[in-house]
Image (tube, rainbow, N blue to C red):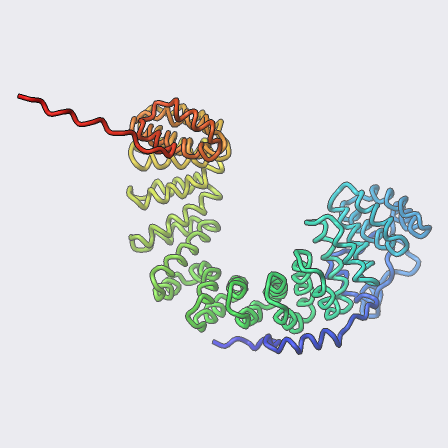
Length: 540
């Protein structure tokens, strides 16, 4: 099938883009009415300047403000009066008396935006002193948006001094929405000239996202013309994320026009997943028309589950045309995704497949993801499987998840297994996982196990897990193994780790231990002890 032609051509020469950026140099005028919507900012309770979007001739008569009617609350009027008189500190104090958090957030944004017009430094100091991080970001965004409107380079210099992470990203998002709303080409040029680093890479992604909302053609061309690297990847992701929301088929075409590589595969998978949710038949047709490559594998990894739900026999027939290793990987992904979202349907589907290694692998993937949400239900399903290697692998997958969620319940399930390899492996898995994050409670559980092979396996895993942080305790646990051969092996394993953590203490313990001399010398890097001489022949 052929895609509807993408509205933009993604492969123009980079020089053409650069010319466009130079010709479209910054004209930092009044921001477009859509800029507030792009920032995701609602109308503040503090009186705002009239804008065409709110009061222009396009508004319905019923939506236009009625002359002479003031719907502000007394507190809002006080805030506006304080702002009008230049008493911004008083205005900030009054904001805390507003009802909802959203109202306070909007008011902070508006008040600090106006404060920045008269005294940016004082406004910035006051914003940074706000205790609540979300409200702090609202205030700083107001400053950044206002500053970017008139002096974008100065605004970015100020932004670079803000705390990195959530605060810096939140403020930058508002600033870039403001700049793109005024002049997207100039905004892109400004961001492209920022110093190399994380802030620039994040900003490029935001420009791509905001620009693509209003002009996907230009945004895509700009992103493709950027130098390769993390910044370009972010810009491409920003454009693609917007295209996916607007038209997955266009996002698919955009992804296919990208150069071969990880970013292309990532974008193809993103487009495939979104398209599969809106038009599975069209998405499948697109995948079928792809040349055999990693592109098709990336797309199937995302849309395979949707295809399987819509037409299991058709999906299986197509997947069976792939090489065994690729098919197994894809089926494992599909089963895992299904197990996480609708495990009972996945279970029924797997039961309908022919018995064999392929179904067993898929069942293990499904059970693991099922257990991440509901380990008890996954365990019940695994218990119904026929005894054997497949059941054991599925059990380990369930226990791997369950041990992190509720190790006590996981341990109770595992110790109820029939005596044998499966139970030994199960308790070993739990001891390893549990001991990694709660060694004290794991130790109490292991201590409660009866002496024997099962306990020895649990002790070995536990001792190996804690050896790096608690070598002295680990060596004591290793010494408690009941089987003599395994006791020596586990003790030597822990001693090797101890030597890397605290060599003097480890050497002292090894020399005083009851380990065989041969094993001691191996640990200490000494030659093996001499063999006793052969007895002299006796004379008749």
